[in-house]
Each structure stands twice: as C-alpha cells, then as structure tokens.
Image (tube, rainbow, N blue to C red; front, side):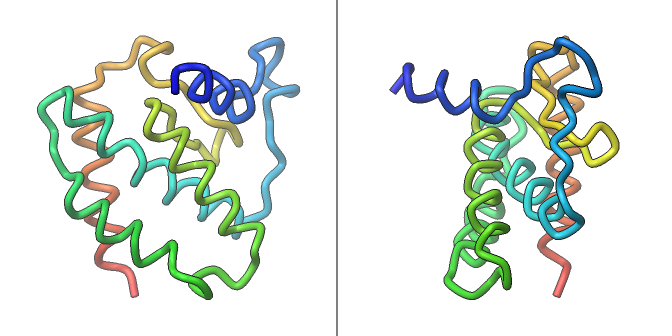
Length: 127
C-alpha cells in the first residue's frame, strides 16, 4: 500500500524543478474534475486534523463516480486520480495548474481542512 501511495504521488505531483515544468495544462472541464476530486479526496485526510466531512464527501464522490456523470471519459479518469491525490493531502490549484502537497508546503492543515470542508459544502449545493 505504501509503495502504491508513493507511486500515485509520483505520478500526480509534478517535480518542483520550475513552476513552468509543473503546470499540467488541463482543459477547463479537466480542471473542474481535478478540483472536485482533490477536495472530496482530502476529506479522509482531514479526519486526522479534527475536521470530519467524510460522510458528505463520500456521498458526493459516489454520485460523481456513477457512469455518465462526466461527459468526457478523461474527466472521470482525472477525477479518480484527483481523489487519490486528495487522500494523500494534495489539492489541485487551477491558478497554479498543478497539485499542491499541502503538508509538504507547510500549510496549516486545520485551516486547509476547514476551507476544504466549505468547498465540499459548496459542491454539494451545485446542481
């Protein structure tokens, strides 16, 4: 499991050689899938920091994983990869166009988790 987690992080988190190299170049629909997936995925990670929104995130994740939710199969693939990245503490930033490893960046994880919870609540209200 640990080797798999490392492999997923290696694939999803670009090297930090330069900001230009790290950009993923995702389309708008792919960015939406990456943002939603990473915020839903980080719910389990946030439990360790006392912010528990995993039940709500799980319901939304289940709905979004249903066949036909995403029109583009690439969005579904990226959504599942973003879930995995979120479970390891990484969030996709459309502004940076990359996954950011929040603990590695030294972010206040309680604050990150509170913001992620608010994003998941916002996602739950979308039609």
